[in-house]
Length: 444
Image 1 (tube, helix red, strand yellow):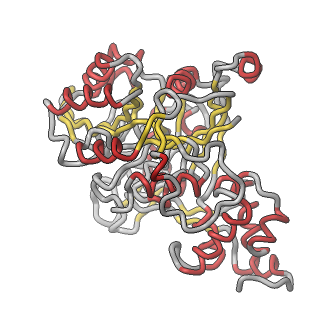
Image 2 (spheres, rainbow, N blue to C red; image 1 turned 90 degrees about the vertical axis):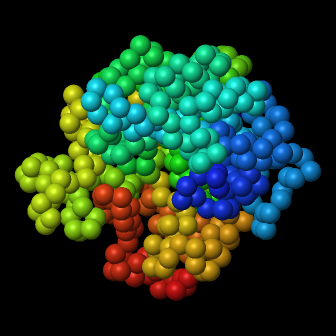
């Protein structure tokens, strides 16, 4: 049995986050997307923690679901083909912003905490509340060394897990060009042995991380970091096993690819991370170097020719993820370690439809077609990963069916993001769209 999991999201109590990020709406969109396990995010915020407790009840050990009396709330259309669970499960998570000085430099490191139950969460919150104001933001800012965060969390419960978030983004990550470190050991010191995984983030993907042999024994996980409901699942993790619960998820993350499929079939309680769902990293807003205000976007090679200085304003460029990976890499592009876990690059369904129609996401026509696909075929991940072309054609159009297949096969054109600006997706040229229609009736 397969389980799609998105562990890192935010609630309405985080800065720059949709007011719709409440428990019931997150639950609804997890169903629409086909996500079986979703992170709560923001469990350190007292109002969000109260909302979680009011709306969730225990399911499998360490996992929670919407209370029975509140289930199916807000879902205004039917989803074809049921999910693994009738209701998605929640796992208790939070992202912490560690901002502190170390070795003469200001460090800004974001870390995700996984916790097994509300009792553990309350103990963590008590200790972190002595250090910073947990009411100020769903992702609290603490003047706390990242290694001390690990020490505190594991002292509360050894069942917790700490994972460096979006590990390569320039401003707030363990390997960030502007405030990070050159290795996990520099950051976490003697607590590095408790760092089993990193989150790749939207601007990097597994092949980029595989270029560092130092990460060969570190599991790569991917999550949406969603700030609005429709962004759930834009990156995710797929696990396989007969059962799932908190302990099995944490063990699977710690083991990474070290347990094989044969072991899964032989061990009733074994769970394995078998694949990650990735953004095309070029679409991430810090993939390449550049200056957004100057309209300058450079590959690492171009930046080096300009000594990492913007040719328009003369100030240092914002160094992107690809550049930073190249700086730390000890392998050539394309080399794959034995521990590598497979991955799949996808584009969210709403974005695919909008690109074909050449109109914005969230528009009436895009939403109508999106709903038709979900009603006819099933949750979004089923549409993107599994649906046959003839079924896609029956629910949409030749153009959209072909676009979904192309994305599945990685046949897309991307203009890399840089300096906080997302990259641009292009699946078809105008000439290609005309050829695909081929005289057939289309949505145009």
